[in-house]
Image (cartoon, rainbow, N blue to C red; front, top):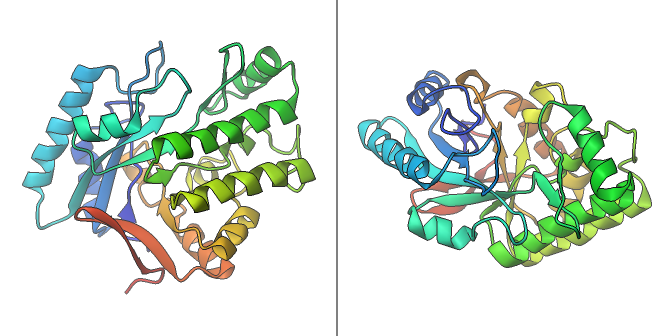
Length: 283
């Protein structure tokens, strides 16, 4: 079993439980590290992010106290999953410095069109995805998905996140209806974005949440993309994107097995104050 998880959400954002409950669960799973990555505040009404700067301060303070309390038993890291919305979201480097964060996972959940409308690609409600596609892009899936991958590329180039979150999550509510993942235009968008990731030396997480929630038939990213990433030398980490304590290790064995089949022998973890590579297969 992979003994690290660096993508975890608590009751400070859209997770179910207090941070200590995730730590105790991680100890029960004999994990070595847990990283908390609450959704950074965004300046709009929502039900998923840390509410405001005051709540973010409280989040960081509580995690620092827990890190001290559990020192020697498990390594605890303090991070954010920061949304990138051009012209709207906070600067990643500013967040990292102001709150003394260990790392930032950069993700795109809301795709901004030329008129400023936002297409929400996440969440359990497929209707929101469909309505956003129609309202923001007149149902033009190529235009919408192109905007998604362009926004990821812009995030990487301008914000320099440590980790790219759930790279191909735009496929989640598609389920093969609007496009096929082997369509030439889609593959070209992926390839262009992977080049940006490679050039900026980002880590890509292998996110298992879609699998164990039954919202995707594959990991984020899928086998085809992981194969391309391996050939390009793009490093990976593994996360369950847990929103409940019991989700911390879900489908991680699947991720380990998939990475091994692709050819990966190393995986990235955060240790002390930096990212480093360790063997994929652990004792």
